[in-house]
Image (cartoon, rainbow, N blue to C red; front, side, top):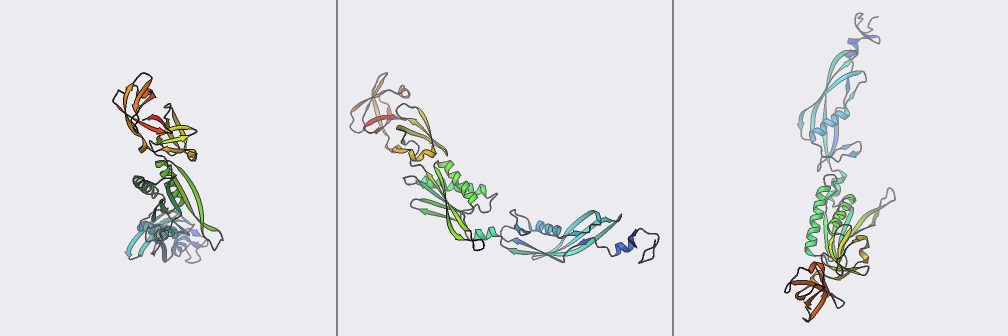
Length: 347
């Protein structure tokens, strides 16, 4: 059998032509003369197959990935080794070459092609939202039936900032474009709903209280007819604070601790410990603030009673001795609270 092109009879045949004639016109790779890649000028994320990558990718790596995605190697090539090189960078255009070494019909060949990769700078949807001050959630930081103290606002700001820094590692919209400082409390505008919920939970962890969400229709998607909503998240911290006296289920309790789920208290009558789930916050009544607790002096004591001076009229009052006061001496100062004309000793 001879080659129909060169007439050779002593070479390996591929079809009706010899291997040399076959390889003479054989093309190992197909590569466009110019490849265009869109990247965000702010975060360097890349548009691939209609989707923006969320990761930061160096520009050089973006060029190499673009080359890889656009190389087409013939099915007849095996054991191929691909070498990619950026030869020169002028502005936003990279001059590149692709070298491929592989085997075709048992013969090792190599092929080199040149191309250009043009970087098209644009703005990804996320960065566009950031620039426009976009937000999906509003955290309403409020207190139940009282003013929020300056130090509580300062602590809330710290909690919000700390949570945003943590969330920003996995959520590009973890930012706060605006804080509205209203008489009734602060409104924190949060870029993404996911991070907004994390912020609300962090505030609740710090201050206790309750969380409620309420969606608000802001517009309608003209293409789908569906409503577009933003979520208002109310974080309402308790009216009572540490040391305050509250009433719950007809018990008078002093608040020892408030966490995200419960209030830990001590009964001021019998010193028993109690835990109240914060979901029952509406059933808790504030009776006296810690600032209303007064100090008086022990004027006498016995194994069963202790005598003190009423801090209002300085009359002598006998009270039942509490175990925790057994080591007190005459002349020591102790704390008390008067509720419904009855005096209670408190810590």
